[in-house]
Length: 580
Image 1 (cartoon, rainbow, N blue to C red):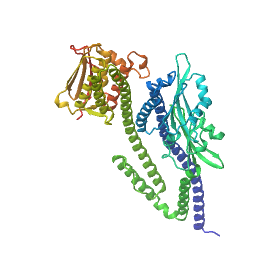
Image 2 (cartoon, helix red, strand yellow; image 1 turned 60 degrees about the vertical axis):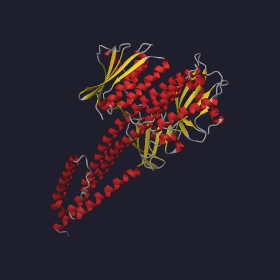
Image 3 (cartoon, rainbow, N blue to C red; image 1 turned 90 degrees about the vertical axis):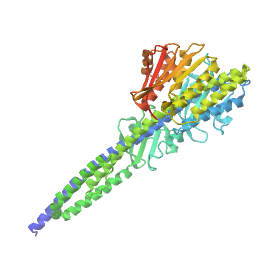
Image 4 (spheres, rainbow, N blue to C red; image 1 turned 60 degrees about the horizontal axis):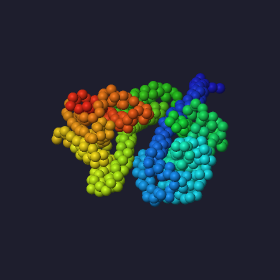
């Protein structure tokens, strides 16, 4: 026999147990789905970052290949009919210097590579000291190598080149053909797979598996080296990789995995990650155990908790809302207060995680802007120096052959001074005084090279001596005037530095061929991919890069324009902010 009190107690307990079961199961399902969705978004961000780094490595390899392909020494050696008349040790030493220069430049963005050159005339070269004749023969034996030669492919990429030591690399290959279509040789730029591994080693846990897959789902890079060069999937994995879902849960080798992926639009590569599901469900089960413990305690203390429930719920929520307002007002400072309710504690953790993402995204944006400026600066610097250096050295060679040692010595001294200014400094800015000294030496060298009579006049008031501007802004414009504006017998270039409050105005004038505002705007608005098809494309590229660097560094209110000056045919003006 039961009393009413007991019946009420049993009934309330039974209802609480049933209610607990009805709440716990959907709660667990919802939290698991929500956590998997959040985890999917989080892994998408991480995989996207890995993909961006892999894209940068891929683009860098292509850029290196283009630079080597345009190198006159390398191309000329490969295209020569015979090596009998060539000084091969000297040529290889010069190629070593070229390789070292590019290697050090790209090493700054964590890209390492080695190069291999193979020619029909018997010339062969590798930047790796351990390369042997058998290695060159091994390359020639690859079926893809002979196939691309037969199909006369100028440029192609092999994502999984199996090295003799069992390692893999990505290779960008340039084939060189004569005018009649005969094969002359090839230039290989090889990036070891370990460089790709570095993009994700610090971003994933050791228990996770990660793969970088090409468009055929072949593993280019992975922390499981046994899968390299293969398609490392069973059917469910393959369907997920080729499908549209952001994440998947499937079983492989008697173990369940959570899988996420990200596909690059640039390369078509897919970053694929597998995480053991037990690691993901562990915090969910811990949270579920806490909920059950709280529910059981609630059954035993239901009468007492019914009077305190409103107070225990309202106080943490009010405190959490106050902490959120304080956090937002104090530049997204994380909430450090711990609450008694696990749900509020979960909200605090999720809120702090959201704050971390916001701060990380803001920092990422600032870092990407800085990287864009650095890349633009390095690209322009690399664009100017090799072209200018090769032509100048050729002029010095011709001067020596013409038995003019004094003139050659002067040219070498000026060239050393220019190279010291352009290579030895990593500072992206320079003072106007130093830039003017650099310009005078540059014009002096051009006069010696071409027997010009170019008069350079720089009107630089003393108050602007220490004003800071980006390096290599003025030199390309002066170079354009020398090469494309002035007549062959020389002319006059005037540089005026003026105050145009609150900005600084630099005017570069010459009395040669006129260059109008409409022509300048056509150059600045055109895309770089279209510019090589236009006349005087080198000038266009130089001006376009100057405009981009100015606006990336100082903003859209600054840049180049043409100013009417009745005393000169062309007056290219540059508006910059005043920086001391």
